[in-house]
Amino acid sequence: MKLSVQLAPKNKRDLLLANPVMTASGTFGYGTEYSHLFDIQRLGAIVCKGTTLKPREGNPQPRLAETASGVLNSIGLQNIGVKAVIKEKAPIWAGWRVPVIVNIVGESVEDYAQLAGELDGAAGISGLEVNIGCPNIKAGGAEFGINPDSAAEVTAAVKASTSLPVLVKLTPNTPDIAEVARAAAGAGADAISLINTLRGMVIDIARRRPLLGNIFGGLSGPAIKPIALYMVYTVAGAVNVPVIGCGGITTSSDALEFIMAGASAIQVGTANFANPRAPLDVLEGIEQFMEKEGIKNIAELIGVGRQ
Ligand SMILES: Cc1cc2nc3c(=O)[nH]c(=O)nc-3n(C[C@H](O)[C@H](O)[C@H](O)COP(=O)(O)O)c2cc1C
Image (cartoon, rainbow, N blue to C red):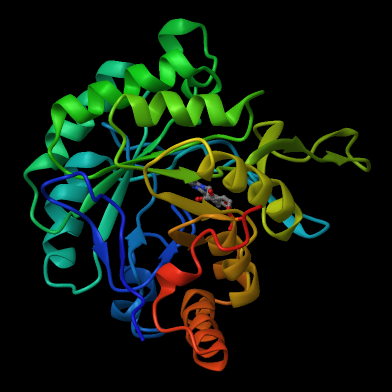
């Protein structure tokens, strides 16, 4: 059975995954936290926590709220910063079979370019995932990813600063996600991943105020799956680079839906909090499905559900 997928076919450094199951940024730490729980080397790829130029403390508590069928988070990109990632984490990853992709976040186009440049030569890093769902501070705080022009600008700046495969991760908080995807692909993205969280909030009626310290948060988990699937289907029809699906994937059936919608790979996020083995369960379920259905190559399933 062939499960391998190529996520950067146009890049000299390519990004060949042994299978299509990845972990979603911010839900699997740096991978090291999970290595005692199961054989993480069996995964297709690990995407680490969003990384900024300087270490960040994140938003005020509380930063997580459970909702019906999902989770609202306002972690605020707490992370150790790019220098520590290169010095402390990349040397560990260099000894791993599973490729690690570093998720990067900036407050300006220059931040993204600098992050990409600093991570370029580090052994142990197989690719970058550019989180464009964060505010462009210089341009008044609107998210880079809501606008095709700023999405293209960030993508081009990152591509100019690295030879690593570049995944651009889209935010659903935009009126026309296919247009943003086309802009990122046109600016050189090797692959497109989607979706990030949907903006939401919870009010604590006893305290008569927003529950999250940051007032608003990002919704993830099963609640967002149909929206994510719709967006993946739409984007897969709009670009000619690989698409990576993410949003509410908890089981192998969920993952297969995204693959049939056109995703070459998928990411498991919030499901990791309830079941840290979730990515492995998803992988084993995909393998069982393929065996049962007599499918020899995962490529036979990619986009098969498209009309
Ligand atoms: C606690 C938490 C932290 C996250 N941190 C990041 C992050 O640092 N960078 C990023 O691009 N996405 C981040 N995400 C978004 C996830 O990677 C994923 O896109 C989203 O949660 C939807 O997938 P899911 O429903 O499977 O969780 C985070 C999500 C959660 C729940």
